[in-house]
Length: 330
Ligand code: GCU
Image (cartoon, rainbow, N blue to C red; front, top):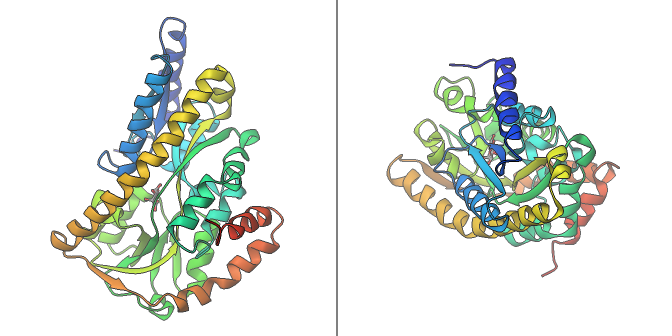
């Protein structure tokens, strides 16, 4: 059943209004929407955060999590947040780029040397500046969550950019993702995450790109049997809160939420490593997905102009330079 956006907005607005009217009597309840399943690591890390927020605010602030896109896609959830119907959304840097261009810095292919560089960027002043950049646009970033490296998966091996020729590759609704696939020689097809399983199954697209957990938590390994590890991007998930809700909280509540968010990012770091390994194991043994090692250099070369163009783009150049500068530091 597909609920129309209007019905959804009315429903969520009423639900929020009900919560607000009781707020003098009881705790403030903040509704959080995201598009992953309950068995996905990010759901568990956000549940960890919600428990910490409850503890640190003596139960005065509660976070109620709505998984599986039940309140809308990531994009619809951001729109609900901007018009006041939702308090918190987990999206990712790719989709947030359309709402706040600063996130585009994270989406440049091969900008990170390795996982340590990626973490240095998320934990740095640059990372914090990006989270804070969107306050006037109606939301503020609370924290990043590791979402691994993204690679191609399809029903054929993709070992060089030439293999992408003629292939429709599902991408997130993000200008950088569209550009990346074009530069590698494929045909980008933006779709929401919730539509992807069926699109792969029915051949609406020939392939997709994501981290390994998508194979198991979203069951994409049932409909795509080759995962080709070119690891073109490392795009973090991002937890954002409505600026209005944020500004309306007490200072000590804001501090409690920020502390819990940061702790959940560290909790997630360990969980992510464990769950990715489990996903790979399950995808190989149960779903018979084959993992292919890929020579990365031809992919790196194909998209190099994107990094150069970003350094010339006044909107994100400072962030990109900031991330580049963290490549070699410890
Ligand atoms: C990742 C990410 C999601 C996103 C998805 C996608 O799984 O964690 O936030 O929606 O990629 O490709 O759409």
